[in-house]
Structures are given as structure tokens and as C-alpha cells.
Image 1 (cartoon, rainbow, N blue to C red):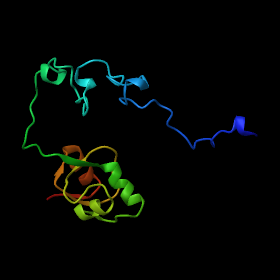
Image 2: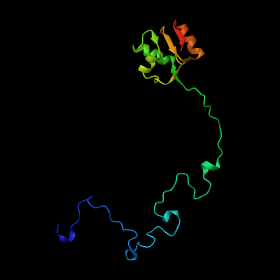
Image 3: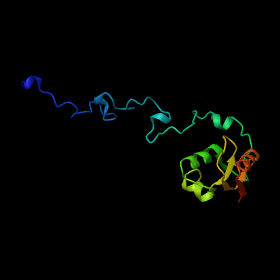
Image 4: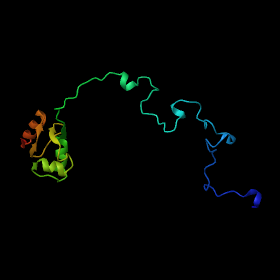
Length: 150
């Protein structure tokens, strides 16, 4: 190592770009490599999402369609095989009510629960929920249980 081959440590310097807009003598003065006129040459320019250069954007060209029912009730579904798994794991014994479902994280306290008929239920359970499908209610009663609607 001598004075002719000294170099800064790796990673200690990082800006080797020409400074833009610092006079004609720098070679990057005038338009500062931004071209002439137009939105992109201005300071403060940021492209808006969906902007198509003033052309009517796609999300405004395509018509709105469909219908959202503001009175729709969204149910949190819990299947029979899930209830059977709770019994198998010893988390519930004879009654499954809303608090038991919330404690086992099958629903949150603000949700409306509907018991669905997937799987089979072998345990005799008293199930309390907001709604039941016909197959679920039949399966619970077939196993000797009781389906109570809140």
C-alpha cells in the first residue's frame, strides 16, 4: 500500500452521482436531466395511482355494477366436525354455547354464529347458536343432543 493506491474502506462512500441542477459547467445544469416541460420535469411531481396522462382512467371508463345489500347478515360458520373436535380434545363436555365458541376462538364476541352440517357428530351436545342449517339440526338431534336458537 502506498499513496498511489489508497482507497476508502468498502461501503464507507456511496454517492458518486453528479449533482443535478448545479450550473451549466457541471454538465447537468439547465433541465437537470429531466428533459423539457411536462409534469415529470416539475418539482413536487408524483404520479397519481391510475393516472393515464389525462386520458379517462380505466376505473372511470368501466361502469359500476352489482348490488350491495346493506341489511345482509354475515354469519360465522361452525361445522359439526369442529364441534366433535372440541369434544375429542376435552374442551367441551355437554353444552356448547356462544361463550364456549368465543373462548375456543371459533367466533368473536361481535359475530353471529351459524352451525353448519359438515362432518358427523357422535357426542350428545346441547348446542346454543344464532342459526342452524337443517342438516346440522337433524344431526345434533340424531346424536341425542339439543339445538337451541338464540
